[in-house]
Length: 258
Image (cartoon, rainbow, N blue to C red; front, side):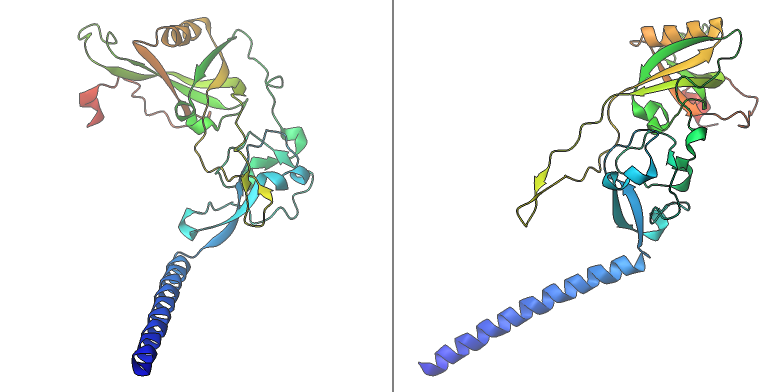
């Protein structure tokens, strides 16, 4: 009886030790895998940050995350040392790394009222989802290319074809308005206190953009925005020094593979 009891206890001890060794090995493997990716600590936006927010008030909106070296931007910041007095150049969205280019001197900050409208142009506004607006990373003063797509009717010779064209080049953005970003609900932590929930979602909500164009281009934008059942808009960030291939032709399905 005693020998069977001792054998049972020994078996239980061996099972516990085996489980501990398996868990330890798995944790060690995870650690080795992370080390192999050259992990680096970088500052990541945890809550939406409006443009013009000072560095001195940024800390509650940021979190330090360990990311694989290959995923870290060259200008990503590890801390805010030496950046006092600067402000955010544009709205920052949860999940993006904080990079040096996003922090500028206050006098460099462009607001919707600080962009001079070239003489002879008029302003027109339209609403798009973030994926159609360079991920929402546009600010007043930027220039964009405007693509217009038609489900049909874009070609007189073949009206049934779907078409896309970079129709308007290097358009001046004069204002960017964003839908409010909802703050994720707070979650209870293990110590009983309440901590803000981490938000790693993609940007959501629409953006309202205002651009300066001539009267003809304004008509094109209004048409594509008005008749969304047949037409749609897509933007690229197109600085004034962007290369022009000289082939602004109409894109159709056969053209995609050329």
